[in-house]
Length: 108
Length: 115
Image 1 (cartoon, each protein chain N blue to C red):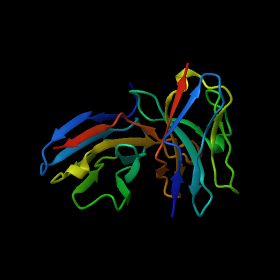
Image 2: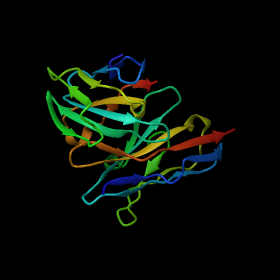
Image 3: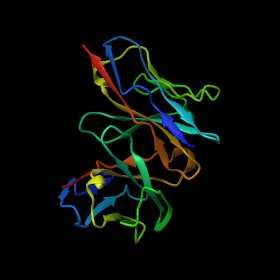
Image 4: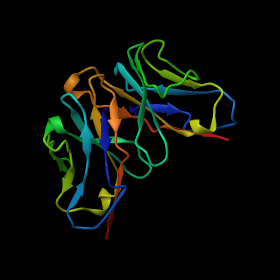
């Protein structure tokens, strides 16, 4: 079955600390993975996608097919990074399958 | 604002009533998706249109739910005989038909409360 798992509901770090938001997936084909972010009172928006292999707002994510993971990382967290983060997998029919999300709280 | 828009933003209804939500996608986006999000969960796929054709429906979409996209532009999602379990945020997203750049852009959602 296709599934995305985000094991942490809440991740709290101090400003300047490294951040790693975990995401594991289950998919039989070749997955396309995404991270979406939702800031307070804003709509869900794309943060990054594995196919682009880019860094957005200092965040990176590497697809590890052996461990079926797509963890989101940032070396130095900023207070403005506080938000809800969702990992998602796109299947062959283009729909997104989301994890349950992780709330990142960056404290001053 | 040229993003995805949804109307209404909030809807409170009594159990048993019918409700209809509207989604206006980004202009020229030919794919349109509906998702539902309940508290503490990520969005769950409901249905998907390519132009006016409804190509996939989730098992979450019971017989009480129907979605249309009559002219391949805006879409409506109707829930008949609402139940308390229908209370959720209903999200609409649209994307262009270009495989490696078909990012889904989300609307602000319609929050449904069934009393």
